[in-house]
Image (cartoon, rainbow, N blue to C red; front, side):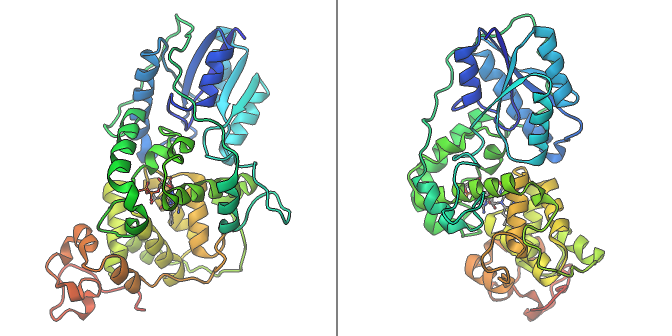
Length: 411
Ligand SMILES: Cc1cc2nc3c(=O)[nH]c(=O)nc-3n(C[C@H](O)[C@H](O)[C@H](O)COP(=O)(O)OP(=O)(O)OC[C@H]3O[C@@H](n4cnc5c(N)ncnc54)[C@H](O)[C@@H]3O)c2cc1C
């Protein structure tokens, strides 16, 4: 092939990138491209995305190429660049969301498109349950099959990318300091050396905060999930398997972000005031408010807190999961269709939980996973001086806590 465009999307790396490696092997000239599409605004993830792009551009430049950046409809801009450069094909990473698949279908109407793996550990259409069906609906059998599944080899970064010179590379938006493959790889190394061995015991400890925090990097593909899955710790790779699980569900049920996966006739309550209090971390339930405030301040929330806050919204306030999921999706740096909506539906009992009536009691969760109240105190300063015995139930404190609301719902 003479010239091939590698269209990046949420695979912003050079290591273990099958589409990029294949283009470098098969084409005389390679054009790495990213399109900033105003139809898919990154919202709060914008500066992180920009940092990922800046880092990718650096990596490509050090390999003799560049990252071409365009603004506009992703399909139109890709086809325009293909016309300008006489590119004969677009190589890209296959993805699961409706948006990504529609984009790839539209693109294929104008040029040859080749899809490669790289967004998940195991491709989302590879594993089929023995009893029939196009995807796994239950996690545990999926986890068993996933562990046995054949894996492709992890690819090295291509040493050189043969670039088509003379193209205007385009300007990147302003970046923050957090994103990108270089930082992600450093974090992966440092975190796994220090915490991987104890992941199983520590990952639910809210104040300990020893989970990897790699999710934003995995979200943007700064790390290859396949490469990360080679870390030797079952409790940790199980979480990556959850990620793959939700991706294969989304591949089979692309309306995951809108429709109940398993409709159960829920009657959701319309309570704008309660929804706003939940969003603001002002429900009066400390463990819920701590999680919601961590989300507001960091754009990230500990998994245990996500379970507690989401369950509180759908099971205690009985507000539609779509309202909560939309808020998470807006604010999370790792916000992404399969994992966000898949997890929300799991918690709401409309998704893949085999116990759809499960409820997380916030008080019991708080006592178990934040026994000294350190997580609560870190995020809810009004409770800083409340004694440990009352920090999770300030309504039982001997003196009323000023500037902190009474609970919206008692349980
Ligand atoms: C209501 C709700 C919404 C969520 N929304 C998202 C989201 O939008 N994006 C997202 O990446 N994760 C989401 N999660 C899953 C999980 O909370 C985060 O992936 C995790 O907290 C990220 O922190 P970490 O990187 O330290 O995870 P670690 O514990 O270090 O796990 C390593 C990686 O495994 C994956 N992972 C871990 N737990 C899960 C899980 N339950 N489901 C799927 N993948 C998982 C993530 O990619 C994570 O980075 C959600 C969970 C809930 C309950």
